[in-house]
Length: 525
Image 1 (cartoon, rainbow, N blue to C red):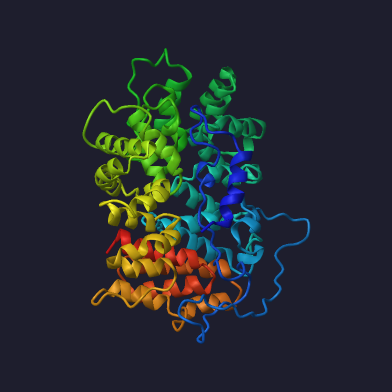
Image 2: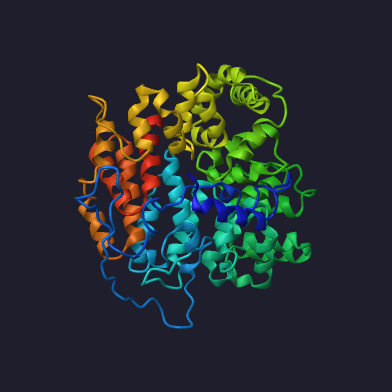
């Protein structure tokens, strides 16, 4: 089942910088993945209409859209640009209408975006990335503070999507101090800080952070002005004690060579993180927020640090599965235990795949999968090997495991049609992948909730239906995502409501993938 988004994202990737050993990440690397499109296969693309399930539809049919007039709402005066409208993915790519945010309050959208906890749910990750990067008209009450754009950028950074966050800000970062600070932080993590420093040097009023001014001035080669700025800020008491000590080591390492650096903060800013690196005392990123892992993707980091960083980023879809596999197979591990056991298991399996040796694949798959499960990287593994595992499932003793993994891949529906009949014990999952689950196994409450969510007789929750009726499509999707997260944690009623709402809103593939992940990953249950 091809995804419409994959073709256009491939074009995006071709226009971006090529993958290189020097780059911290390929240009918006994760965008090169053929991520699922939030558009139902059997209905037209989403539109600003109320969408409700048809009570007369057959069980296997998708709900039918019912049009409702959407009120015209003035967004802003002509000639006054609103940066909240900026996006990287046009409607023809996402399938989302330009009006997805238009009738919502910015504060409501900020609250819903900030509340998302999609780490355990790959299908929700894919959908959230699409929403965060979508080009669309801004909320009707959007102001020049760009609160919604800031929320989107912060959500991307929290997921580790620092490069797409930077790309969102590139055209508008100098329009306000708040946007500049987000942009500056992102460039520090991606290694692109010269761009932000040039803007700050040209317009110092962009930041009241004198440490940033000192750092950028020094990077430009004007050490004299940097030292003067530092001395002035220190005399006025603008800099904290830790900043003073750190900048002293940065500006004059020989004079302060024998003096101890201040104890590194538990939650450093990206600037403090880079300053410690600049003075020869780099901080470990393992205990820092995920966004800092981007810095370890540079060649200045060791192989182990790169692998651990890549795993953290791949876990939330911020790094492509191909990049992760490339790192796993780069060279032979020189040690054992921990991440090295996973590297060894992955190398043995990948070698079998490359050789086309079905027997060796069947032998090495269980250990490779166990190591991947322990690292919560099942989605990346399924994406990388879904096609070959579909073939393996039909021919070897490891077939049941291979089929389970294939159902977690983008080829889940193809696998269900082609090899599902070989595994009657997975009949419920097979029919779920086709969009029409059978009667659930007796006593399986979660399966029963899923089946009910796919029933044409199950209406979507009233609060979400109300949002859709008001033309607040984006808000309705975000609310449904939160409901799904509650349901996936073991609340059957919430799970039923979320799946029904996804399907009614036209997000059939998200509903199927999400339900399969609840069944096959069993996270939080």
